Length: 203
Image 1 (cartoon, helix red, strand yellow):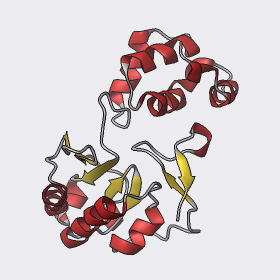
Image 2: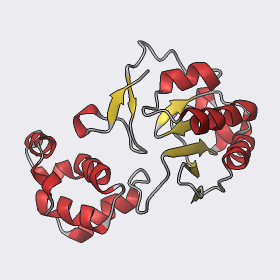
Image 3: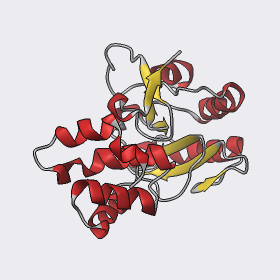
């Protein structure tokens, strides 16, 4: 195993579950942060930490799409194309993002800045079409706003991607009132979880 496996985060996560096998998903996030994505070495480390077999860890990592099995760009742009978003123009939003970022769906841009993907429902049907950047949600996005968001990411290169900020700049109708403003966002193309080291203070 590598040095990250003795990190305080790992000890804390393992101690949070009566059965350490239950820690497989949060540990995959930490491992993905350390390796850049869910590599074979990352899965092997998680298997050793949890007492699972490599095949069991791989079955979890391959089932959930947020565990990327290959490297992605600095900004992972995910566009929902499920029925609600599709009916509200999700395909047009995806096409605008592909064009503005010069990155086809399912690929990473030449400079490694963008990865673009279409995804199934992300739970924001009332605010369709919905987009995520590094798993930070933006609702009610129109094609022109999607283009502007790509330019903002390319020109500003924010270290922290904050959903509330992007919603104000590029979003439209929300599914519901999000409540208090978030102060933390995503540091990486991983969901923002402060205990896992993947979240940081926004601007």
